[in-house]
Length: 146
Image (cartoon, rainbow, N blue to C red; front, side):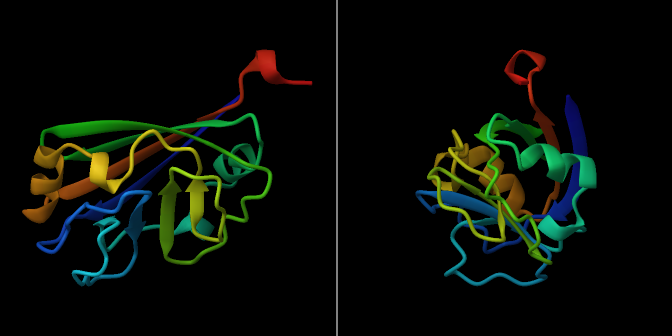
């Protein structure tokens, strides 16, 4: 089973991309230097707005979430996991985490990329204010089904 959604946001001159354990996309329009995990602002969706089929799959411990981040001509693919503990009800934020920590903003845990590990050319495209396209695809393999 697979489900998909797309979130559109944009970069900002203050994108730093230096956080060691997370990255975030937010509906907020502004960014301060303390927001070192935020890579995209003015998103058209928060966790609560995601496609219901995608949210249902993400709430499965077996789910794999593949996130394709594109800004300008730079694309990064991030792999993370779903969890039965995800609430996916934050109105403004989407957060990917390296750890297993879960809040209402979390959409993926055990991510293989965080803000600090994203390619610097990608971060520079975001600092120029490029559009950020976030393609989400969750999958629970048929082999993993009970």
